[in-house]
Amino acid sequence: MIPVSEQKSFEQRFSIIRTLSPDNILSKEEQARLTIMDAGVGDFFTCFGSTYIIQEINKYQEASEDYSKLKDYFVTELTCLCLETGAVGHFEWEIDDELEVCITLDQIKFKRLTDEEGQPIDEDDLDQIVEDEDTIVYAGETFDYDDDWAAVYRRNSKEEKVYMYEFVNNRSSLFITIEEWQDGDKEEYRIYISKPVNPLELLLISKGGGTT
Image 1: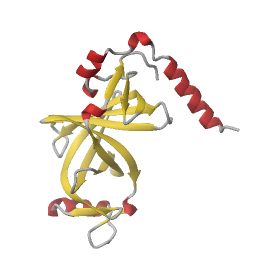
Image 2: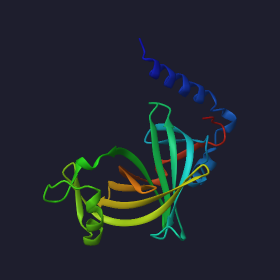
Image 3: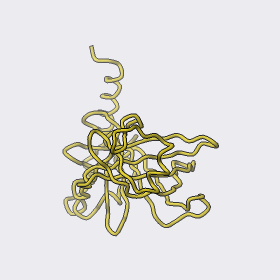
């Protein structure tokens, strides 16, 4: 017997697929012209052989370290449902001289990170790692310090403060982002593994036809 959760996931995806009306399918010319920057909630796109519908679009906006001043740099986050698997995934895009896209692969804990000597690291080590522009190790692979910056995260009408610590492996094929979320006097840490995606791998196939 199929578990109830799997049955509900299948029914949800089947219902969404039925909204993919031929009238909303983009022409080959439109698919070639549009990018992920043109995507909106309810749109469909393909990537790596899978089809996704966009369920949410939220933004990070860079801020000064004390969050008193906002800067003109944004990262756009797309929360997507994979129609083949039912998995929820996250894609992000930004303009840094050119369009850059990445996909989140996994969320991990501090206990899976060490320094180069194999010693565990935690949130108390982050300031020193940034000051030394040091490296961290995950799954036997070394990641170099790349950047750190403050941001305001906007989801619906809510704003949250988050500080980002970014690391990259020597082939620039994997990224680690440690996010420090502010909650009053407390901090919550979320650590993500992601990889870059060639923007040409993402193909918008339908706009405005889906429902979430």
